[in-house]
Image 1 (spheres, rainbow, N blue to C red):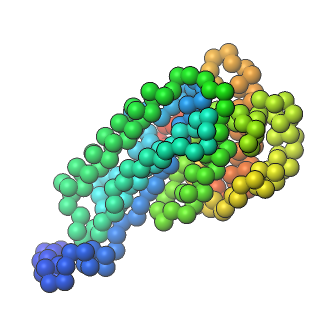
Image 2 (cartoon, one colour):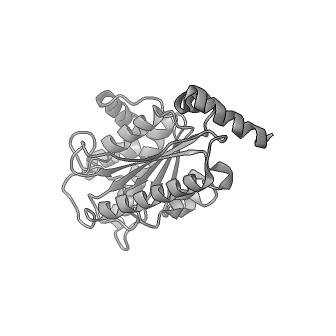
Image 3 (cartoon, helix red, strand yellow):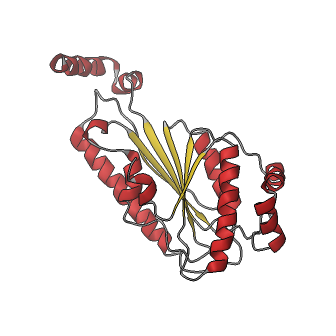
Length: 252
């Protein structure tokens, strides 16, 4: 069957054009990962050029060479508007996939991710006076929810400590207390400031490991973690919190 199908496809493509045939054939599914890196504090866990743990989420092997991959990268910084970098390998039909070409595309994709994270690390290693965690995380989650990808992951490397009068300032004792004791009220206030759409189908992985002896940051992180898990799941996302990305991706 395979021996006769490919010549027929080749004839059809010559007769009617490659683009029309490719659009008509079923394609592989796409996995999209949005990575958010927080450069407003010095953190133990950051996006790393050892991308294999993250790469595991794409499930690329000899049986899935026709699947598509997409990665977007964005920083949490002291402003809410920042650059979004995008790297893509488009899905193709299993009938038209050239294994050597696909392997080369995936290798290029992986190398581009490494270079993106290497360049991002140049901005890390310092503490900034503002930290716009909420707006960046919720915007990226919302963008993912509108994606046509089959599998959608939001990976956030952050202590989740908002430090802004625009949405949240967890360093204010009253705000931290409200987030811990009355999260519903805080969520309603935030939802009045930013429309949060359904996040069903989005899997969120929060990666954070506290710095040694920084008990104050760890205490605030536990408040922030519980709050964000409630907020994200309230809108339909699945959420896990891990100290290392490997713990969330090794069994996928």
